[in-house]
Image 1: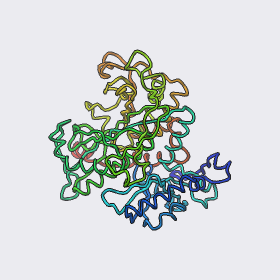
Image 2 (image 1 turned 90 degrees about the vertical axis):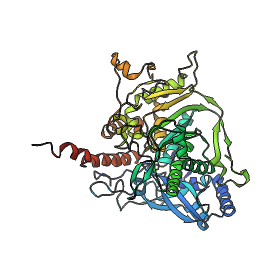
Image 3 (image 1 turned 30 degrees about the vertical axis):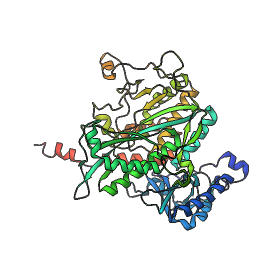
Amino acid sequence: MNRVGEKVKPVKSSARAKASGRTDIERFVEDPKRTKLVAEVRKKIDALGIDYLYLQFVSVTGRIMGKGIPADHWESVAQKGFQLVYGATMNLFLNRRGDYLGYGPEAAELIGIPEPETFMQLPWDKRVARLWCTLFRNREEREEPGAFLTADARGNLRRIHDEFKKEHGLELRHGTEPEMMWLKKGTDGQPDGGYSNPYCYHIDQFESLRPVYLRVIDYCRQMGLDMIQGDHEDSPGQLELNFTYDDALRTADRLATYRQICAQVAREFGIIACFMCKPFMGVSANGCHHNISLWRGGTDETKTLGNDERKLPGMVQNYLYRKGGENTFMPDTDDIQLPGKIGLKAIGGIVKHLGALTAIGCSTVNSYRRLWDTGFWAPVFSDWGFQNRTTGLRVSAPGRFEYRAVDAMVNPHLMAAALIKAMDDGLKNNLDPGKPEERNIYQAMEAGKQVKKLPMTLGDALAALEKDAVIRSAMPGEMYRLYDEYKRDEWERFLHTVTEWDTKTYLDCLP
């Protein structure tokens, strides 16, 4: 049952599965290529001395969920998978009325099937390895047994991207700029300010966090993240460490892995890894700009990243990066500041759907503190330009488009799927983004330019998402219902909470 008592609608199996007479889960498990990979994982387990396996997936909010099993049972779980309540996709949380979000206790259990190609030893405990999983409906359900579970954010992204590739002959490659803050931990275990001073690009502040970021980078490289640059940003303890852009699913997986690595490093140093968007007012927030481009062709190349190729701590697929091909966002006129025709249409789709996209990129109540704290280059306006940070979107370099209305709390798999759907609309309908804005957007507005604002609260963003069928299609089947239910409950919790601001403002205002 959902939050208004409506029965959950069954999802439909893929057409190919029906045509073959097999369910989605049967086709997935029985793939001959996968059978070979399962055997290769056993060799890795034995060679690396792995005792335990984390089988993980991404919840609706981007939290890493799953189960652990002894490595002795690898072959069995690779074939049968593991079962977990459907509500795990909603973090198994209660709404403010005390009911389980998304699924009640009477719901069936999902099936998680590990993807052997994602096997990776954890560098901080070499007895343990992790694998990403694809989720399915239970084999014994009365309707659509064994179908792909549409509450699976990772699985949805893979299928949506595959459809986009088939229709347009294009693939999304993107990179992210994950800002986050390293905070001191007080005697009560709570945050006690930033680990460094808020001096942007200051090498001495960067140096103060050297032991932390070097360990992050070391773990990242062992787990297949090609780290390329880093700096100290302009908030207390704020760092940005970047890794190479790649295929959409691999980039989303790597961002999720990066967060897990930061959490582990924080435990090792007794500090806090904070991905909250706006823990401090008056300084910049934790953004997570997405730099995107659409490509034709290309091949996968292996980057061992300093690891011994003969003894990689994970399957080789973790070290693949998409290279070559044609970047269709590159200029195709004499104006090197303008993307090509495909890029302009893609931007047109994103500009059209910015309101609904904001509900995914700025996914928490706290996200909107970033938009309200003016003067820190927050992407407030629905406009675009070339290297213009006062607009919500910008061409950050020839062939690359920076989507700015996204912060560090984003579910990267949902975000990538939503951007694909927005660009799909732009390509199909030849959407024109309008002329790029070269002026400071605030000065342009003073001169009379009419500019549409993004939604400025989570509630307004959810309302925009509800009206936008294109972006909702990035959350197929049950996913939109689940996301909307989770986030509306979050918004309602905030609205019915008395805050410190309330008491400071109203406690003694009368008589």
